[in-house]
Image (cartoon, rainbow, N blue to C red):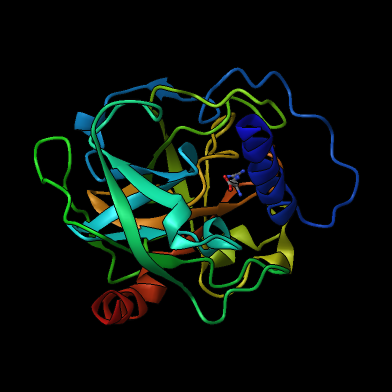
Length: 259
Ligand code: ARG
């Protein structure tokens, strides 16, 4: 029953994250987890949380304040706060750390299921997270990262596109950030699907994937992106697409204060 729930959640995301497409060759040999990643511990990513839906990992998120989480709006469609909890301070998505209830959340008013535009949301927790070496906030970017800036993504998502294998242990990978204009250029396959408020991350064979959504893209210790969508995962001409946190900085601050 809950397995089915997860599959549906991941499928929903897979559908939301798939663009209408020309024939695309199958991904070669994707052996990674967060595709192409390395196992890590929460101490290295203390701002990372697991958003749990009915007791199971559904999406990632980032700690902005002890009572505020930043995640993706597509993670919070057709869900009530009562079915959500946040697991913080654990290397594992299915045990350990601190579990706190969600009091309320707000999706961006202009989030679009069709285009994935404005894919950002703020969650208010029912009680503050106990900040420690494994539970720490991360600051929000105020300017969009430069094309080619280094980025790091982390999460408990699937090991390769289409697999059901969510990772119990946190994994990460380094990628290079692509500006919106580079990502929509003919060097890649998305063109005008890359809208204002989106940036990309790319490295051969490395990417976020289903179950990593809502999670952090950090650069120099700052939250610059939120995992949003991609055409499958780690395909050569299709970078991972992230919500550009700098674009939404004031929306997040204002919304956090309003919840
Ligand atoms: N929409 C997916 C999720 O809910 C994340 C997709 C990210 N895909 C990618 N190729 N970077 O988990």
